Amino acid sequence: MRLFDFTLKVNGFDIDKAKIALAEIQAKNDSEFETYIEDQKRAIITYHLEHNSFYKTLGKSIDLNDWNSVPIITKRHLQQPLEQRLSDGFTPKNVYINKTSGSSGDPFIFAKDKWCHALTWAEIMNRFGWYGIDFNTSKQARFYGIPLDKKGYYKERLKDYFSNRFRFSVFDLSDAAFENALTKFKKSEFDFINGYTSSIVQFAKFLKQKGLVLSQICPNLKVCIVTSEMLFDDDKSLMETYFGVPVVNEYGASELDLIAFQNLKDEWQVNSETLYVEILDKNNTVLPYGEEGRIVITSFFNKAHPLIRYDVGDVGVLSKESTLKKPILKHLTGRTNDIVQLPSGKKAAGLTFYYITKSVIENDGNVSEFIIEQLALDHFKIKFVSRDELSPKKRTLITSEIERYLESGITVSFERLNKLKRSKSGKLKQFVSKL
Image (cartoon, rainbow, N blue to C red):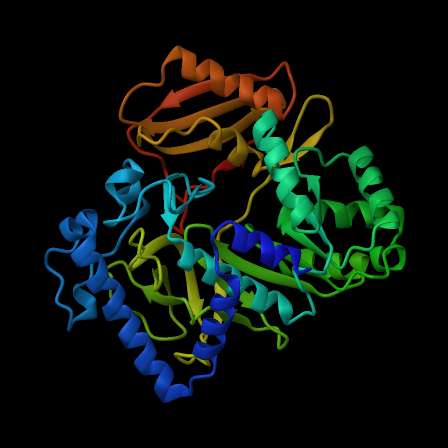
């Protein structure tokens, strides 16, 4: 039984149909593909202008014959209750709902219709297939976070079981935790590693310290695929040396799709099948290939929720060798997280704060921006911009969540600001260590 495919179908995601649709898009020649892109751009705008009151308000001055008249959507536009952003006929009960990680500092809740999400999975499975990975049969070593509340914890563990994967928590990156991980690799026939870059780099450093090559311990291992954070050349070299397999770079956004994936020619190939990626300057003018600017993306198939010319908050460059059918991402600025260090000597991934903030972000758009600064081993400051002041109850809840995910004895202070300072890339780095 193809259990992963079956699980998607049970949840309403027609993966078989999505795989066929993706193959048909990929089979188009260059001329057909150009027509396809223009048709999809017009179709998704037309749909939302007719069926989405949120987008009707935003796109009052759109001229369907002038793509440049289409407004840029920012994360700020989306910081309002989800129900106000859904298209006609869609409700929280018949769509896929999730929250952004908040790594940009602008968290929000988003939705995808089920067909759109099925195509997302078809795209992911297609790209992983380049490296011989089949989600139905290949066993995954997953370096991700996991909710610590009982319901969330067991829900993720159940998903892991049906997805043929074992999760290594990124909340503890100590040598003791990695010793346990090493034992698991010795006993399990993992086909691939997938997860947060910084956490996997720490595991590679542990292997270097031990003088071990992971593929000699786990001969089934084929590839390591990293995501969510910047992959630096020296870290990639370190991982390939001590894992003994290729390291592949993935760039995605949960609210969109897989955006770019390193192909077998070591090119960061952009997803042109379900997304339309543009590079814009500060005046929202489209830049030619080879020039650096803001990454703005249109989701072709999300009818439940408009993500049209959506500014993802990153800066990048499309290679001069790019074509409409095969864009190549030459460079990406940002997307890196530090390691949290604690008084006990324990370490955790900076993205730990994603799970903390995710558990307290409400669907009311009150907190619009936040960053966490580590000022001392036992002192963290949360700087935030909000419509209303955080109540003592909410502050206590956030503090207790930080202690629950990290360790007790931590001091948390809060600073409410009118505006947070952004990096050159235009992003807010969610976690900053001052140590």
